[in-house]
Length: 229
Image: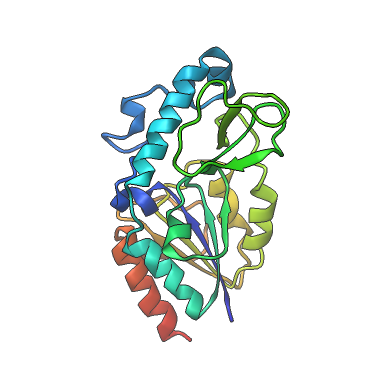
């Protein structure tokens, strides 16, 4: 089977009702990122940070995978599919995809604020002040905040470097280091981009562009990829 590596961003989940940070009406308009998504914010106001991610978790509980998520899961019948996602939701998992690397963490998990190796699955429950890890430290969202290292980046680079086909879905390619992954796709790999908006792709190689939302775009991608088998 060919190795199909797919990088997904906020546009992948927006059809499921997940608010994005950058779009009009998105989260930036309701919250200042420096107040809810940085280590400094956590040190300054844990209650606000916890409330923000508790709201996101409750929202996620009411969302369902869209046809784009389901379409990517269905591609596993024909390809060795590896998803690398910038999203912190669990919609790829719920759609049935089996190989998913979360670059920016997972909303359904909490971790120790003193030991990053202590990670707990919490589902859609709130994290409250006074919820401690086994070492006695406050639990925090298992999220990579702005200003923190992306610990899964090296693995993502290795997976991308092994791709026969590399697809970008629903990301502006503005958020680094994830946006730089496309540079690691082998010269022999075909490159695809699915997004309804104009996206500046930071490579000089040929990129097949499908200007559609995730659901329709994945449907078109599937038709094209299966036609080439």
